[in-house]
Each structure stands twice: as structure tokens, then as C-alpha cells.
Amino acid sequence: MSNPWHSLLLKTDDSEAVSEALLTAFSASSYTRYNPFPGGSGTPPKLKMFIKHFVAPAQDGWTRILGDPDPAVLLTLNQSIPLLHGWLDDSGGSWQLIADGTVTDDPLAFSPYLKPGKTLDDLRRAQLGHAPVATVETDGLLPPDVQQLANARNVNPKQADKLMERVTSRLFGRLDKTSEGEASSMKNQARAMISGSGGPDWNSTTGRAVRAAADMMALPANWREPAWSDVRDAYQAARMLARNPKASLLPNERDALKTIPDAGQYIAVYVGKP
Image: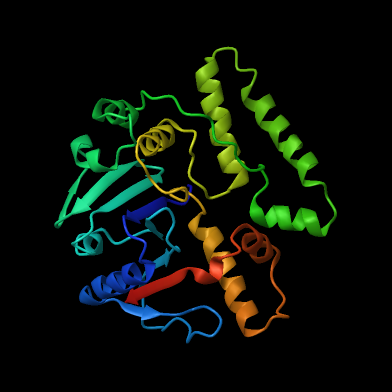
């Protein structure tokens, strides 16, 4: 099962205010903030239920919140600014608008966010999966831990990826009684099971619909990426280096920090309750 993707977007460039509003909403719902990163006090053992967010630096006049939210808290967050919530997981995906304590996916509610030249009919077609979108290039088939082991043992990851690709092709590429579309779907599922990458399938029917709807709206460039897990790794690395510039980083932390060099500017909002 892949990890869920959530993106919360507010039309404001004050990310500090967004993080404060987020913390206020969590506090009102009996959550306690904690800091498990270098320099923090760790995770209190009494906490059993966790919500883990990062507030990204403002971009294109928007502030993005990453992480799997508490739906009840979203209803109380920053009542003065509507909140766009996009998500994609194994059960589905879509876009919602949260404002004044209500949630809606009615295309009419998104009209203030449409790109110039786009119409509500365009958005409706996109939501239904009737708008074409390009295929998203995925990473290699090797799981992250196997990728690290391959690097440590001087195994060429590209050659290993090709081997994994041949395995799925032989398993599903010659099924005479399977349609081309079904075979392709089965191969994609096999790749996901083998890789264990944990990311959402942006090339699935639902993933394409979520991307198509986003294409109709004037969203910031970072509406989809970076992924929460990459920000977590990069933020961990940034905090370690801030405390000790000579700190030794794990391979995934080094790679994440290269990809997200401004990770130290993200605001971690980690909360929990007993």
C-alpha cells in the first residue's frame, strides 16, 4: 500500500502565520506540540496519536502544508482564508475547498482559482478524468533500502532496475488472454509491489484526474512536490548540520538535502495526543 499524499494550500505568503494558525487549531483540539528532531526534546512517551506536518516557505503567493491531516482540525483552521485540500491514496483522491467550517468539491467553489482561459466545464471534465495529462516519469524500481545496499556493494542501480523491469515484463507482458490495458495495469501494480516506493500512483486514473484538476487552477509550482518524506529527511539533515556542520548524514538525508536545499526554512508542526 502506498503512502497517502496530501497537500493543503492557502492563498497567503505568510507561512509563519499559517504555522501559528495550525498550532492554534491543534491546541484547541487537545493536541500537544513536540519536536523529535536534533535539538528538540524528543517524542513524549504519553503521546499515542500523531499528526506530522511541514509548512513550506511561501511560493507564488501561496503557502503549502504537507502531511496527512486531521479532517476535524482543518475545519477550524484559518477561517478567514479558504483552504484547498488535494489528496491521493489507494482509496481515491480529489480536491476539496474548505471554508467557513464547510467542505465542498463542487467545481463552482473553485472558480476564483481557475487559470485565465479555463472554465468550470474544463474543471468538471478534469475532475471526471476526461482531460488529458502527461505521464509522470517514475523513479527506479528498487526500494530505497535496497538502493542504498546496491550503492554500498557497488551494484549498478540502473542495471538492477532493468532486471526488475524484465521480471515484470515477462510476468505480465505475454498474457494472451489479457487486454493490453489490463496487462499494463497489472505491470504497474507489480512495479509498485516490488519497489515498495511508498509514493502515490500519479499515473493511475485517479492520479491523472487529480493532476488534471490542478492544471486547471492557478496553483503554486510546489503544489505536488516535494514529498513529505523527502522534506522530513532533508529537514532532519538541515537540523543536524545547523548544530554540527561536520555531522555525518545518511545517504537518504544527503540526497534529500540536495533536492531541497531550503529545508531549514520549512516549519515542522508535529503534534500528538494521548
